[in-house]
Length: 331
Image (cartoon, rainbow, N blue to C red; front, side):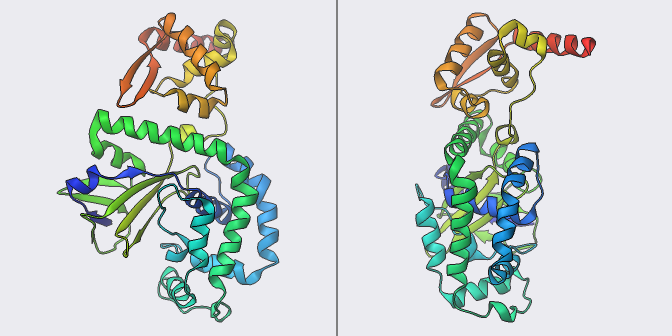
């Protein structure tokens, strides 16, 4: 397994960062794999795979660059720049484009697990080709719904921040990429399952970066010159899905579909921003639903740091379960 040595001050100073560039790389990896983790991803792939494959078919050099750069074990470093604070997509892709040609070729040799660089990739325009492909993926598949994605990512950060206040950093780190990230104790953070030498990152900048793609949404990166390390992870699956959890028909008839949907989602604590992101309802509508549910004693709220989290009360849970059973009986 790969792990980082990290002291308490570095962990305490770590933070969450949203990155359009990381979201674009995760989406590119999803297109490359062509395998969906949930129906929402399947629908997204169905919309965008034909155009993506057509583009690569017309540019075989870039297609070969991508196959080499997205290795089975390691992604070429120049394709995964470490996200900066409040960095736009344009700023991120500019760093890819500015990569020296010899460094890009060396990174590809690493992602090929030491194998020889294909002759077709022994050229100086690899960074420009990679940047062009990133721009295509951003403009055609990510940017059109970036506002929705950003709300989902912000909601995930709210939830993780609340976890820190409730269960400490170890709980959060164990849940970022279950089975891959884990707090090992003795100031050690497991970051993946690969047998790489440990890295001492105490005193460095450490950022955690959520992305919405699930299966392809996870990697680590770093910049030695700035001593900056990033752990990219897939955001909470419930947030990344294409649609909210199913609402029992009888509950929808009782409360109204939108309000019942909010109650169903509150099996786990969520903030208003999370509910807005997941349901697609406006902030004002979500607020009105929450007030009615609070007044009825079906949900409760509590403060977690700067956030207010809502969850079902015991009465709310009983109501949802009763309506679930009633729907099952009727079917």
